[in-house]
Amino acid sequence: MISESGVDFQGEDRQLKVGKDVKVFWCKDGFYYQGEGVIVQLSRGEVAVRLQKRVAWSDDFRAGQLVRVPRVSDSRRWSARNCVRLPRRYALAS
Image (tube, helix red, strand yellow):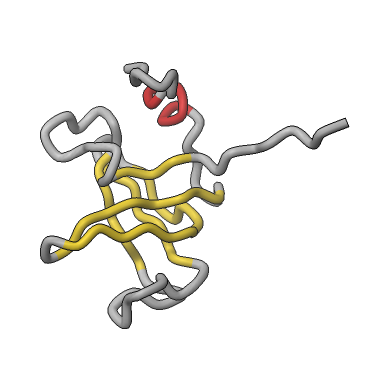
């Protein structure tokens, strides 16, 4: 699945591995959150991420807490606001 902006979500999903740093996006009680963490568990339809820092504007999500989100293969629960993404690597200007 490639988005209109050219993001290859399935390609990113194939690169997920336990121990990999990711950005995680999720929704709880009608609010959207995002944080940085490390993948601690992968299953066929879900990714478990341990947060590395406290999430801004939230007392509910602290460093060390586990967040579970669907993988792209779970088309009913997955969305760009409920997923993990690989960190972007920007090339330095020369």
